[in-house]
Image 1 (cartoon, helix red, strand yellow):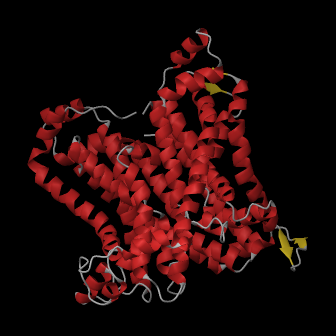
Image 2 (cartoon, rainbow over the protein chains, first blue to last red):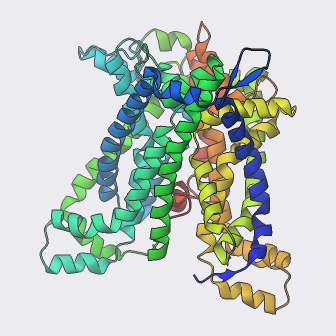
Image 3 (cartoon, one colour):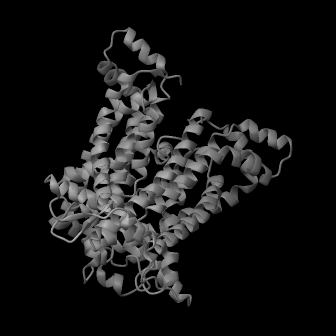
Length: 289
Length: 283
């Protein structure tokens, strides 16, 4: 759509600007403030320069948390994206069953995140959970409160359960936009199922999938509630992801300086990904999708 | 918009040989999704002795006592009321400020519009963990700690950008000629916006409201950090029960089931826009 230039439109966005500035800029400035100061208690602060950033960049704790975080995001993307595409390809195209599947698939997306954690915490327990009990009866040693591997499997399966539907729904939206003529042409050419997928469906889904991947990467990168409820970051530090570590540092130990420096670096990573996301979105808009 | 209709006949003939395969895949996937939810529902209808004693796949002694506990004990049901209050406040605030802004973004070029639009997005993507402590200090210092409005305002951090993006996605679908015709007909901006434009994008407003409601409802970290007693959300009530000794599993499960209900009730109406909403109004 061709838009007209009108600087008075600023008045229309002013309320948003004020509100979001109040709830984003002021807190962020507080964080910046803490990140360059040190305190000896009693609310007395001293200029510390970039000391905290230096300390955090050389702290094993942050690098380990970042490593676990990247591993978590990598694993869930590797599972959710192919699985989501697979589910989308198998969804009914229209009619009652399409709506039926859409509604049931969306259900996990609407459950409060701590309830998601509670559901899996209960489901995986060896004494009262269906999953834990079944695995135990099969003779598999599974206890997510003691074994790091079991804890990891639990939070990964939980995330797959929670968010695969999002990838599937977006891929499905992409699939529905493919005109039927494409399939008919492919049929005339006697293209195999794989070739239809590779040369028609995948390219047409590419934009939507990119959004799905970025959204999943970003949301998994700041995941807090679900793994916190299930494992509390344990056993040991095995499932302490970035947000869990940050909350522990800021609200638990009240290490304001390091936590603030941590926050800022965390935020910069998110900013970078947001920028990629934005570029993808605006390119899609230009193509008129 | 991608809502082009497919010719059903053609797609059916294409998928006919694998229709059974499709049904099996979908059944398995939906089973995987529903089994944990079923287990929670199952537990909520059992007595604690049955939960901890025999391992049963369905409740042998069906009981609604757990639900009765929640609906009669103020420490439980006020959690729901608190959550609902701040969620509704947040939805109203978000939509009120987002509507004009989305209109501006969808219709006009103005100085810094792209940067502003991007900056809004970064707030949707900001990790709540980064904001937990500063929010705590900010709202404590202005005396709003443990009030509903504090949580509602805090959730604006990600809901206002979300609402702007979703609404902008819907508004760009409305032809600009409608605006121009209305102005020629002598409508003021406010009159046009409320009487003509808003009815045109009512589905978009509904979807945006749904997503604001939902993201505020599912969030826990900020709402827990900003409240202690008076505005404590149901989610926080649940986590505190988890950490306490002598856990009442049946009541916990019933509380969980009750939190799923608001989303489940309205999901049918937004089913065709779910993907669009989660993708911030795009797709």
